[in-house]
Length: 275
Ligand SMILES: C[S@@+](CC[C@H](N)C(=O)[O-])C[C@H]1O[C@@H](n2cnc3c(N)ncnc32)[C@H](O)[C@@H]1O
Image 1 (cartoon, rainbow, N blue to C red):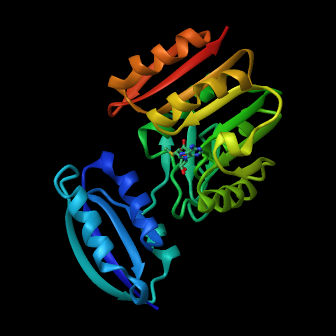
Image 2 (cartoon, rainbow, N blue to C red; image 1 turned 120 degrees about the vertical axis):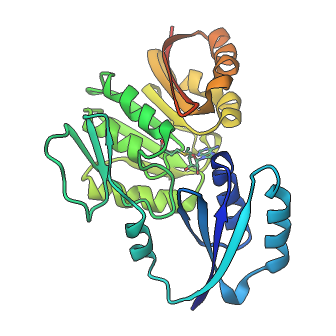
């Protein structure tokens, strides 16, 4: 099958939304690049007018420029293998694909074959979540990973000794990819599809991990509070440094105290404790 390839240069903060909207109009594969994204759509059902409309909507705010090519017989595995380098999270965690050799000097080795899902450790939000996790006692704990993407944080929780880990994501592709990564890392993790309201996790959790976005976090904060055991920990990311105060304003009246805050590349990550 022939594919159309679009190299879309754009501002970093618009990549996730662009990928989501392109997926809605029939694009089925994406690669993140230094300049923006590469997006691929099967040529035979490409919807040109929806694509043009979408680009018009974001061209100014996202500083978009587009280059179009036609490609035949794309080998997706080869494409993402070319574009995925392993990453060292400080000298503690090594995140790699199955075709990269392990590096025994790192304490934690995570194998992630990301394909189209978010969560390799390259992004500052995932990176900081992994570091915060590494500082916390997970032994024998029950952990919930909200918006699990590739499942990287759920896998880290297991490597740190968590007893039961449950993960979910609204994206079907992430669920499939997460399960694949759980197998690669030989960890047993319950995986579901949907929002937290749809999945409706039962019982309480000692640790909740939520690297999503500001609006979802603000909207779901009360549910996290109900699901956390007393003195349970909530690790949040997916929002900018300037949004920390808004998050704290929402969390403090619900009985959370701030344990740690950190920022990298203007992306924030918080650790909160439920009193
Ligand atoms: C920023 S990525 C984080 C992925 C991974 N947890 C990490 O830390 O790298 C956010 C993920 O949340 C998912 N997501 C977005 N809104 C959601 C919601 N309301 N409930 C559950 N998952 C959601 C997205 O599909 C995406 O995979």
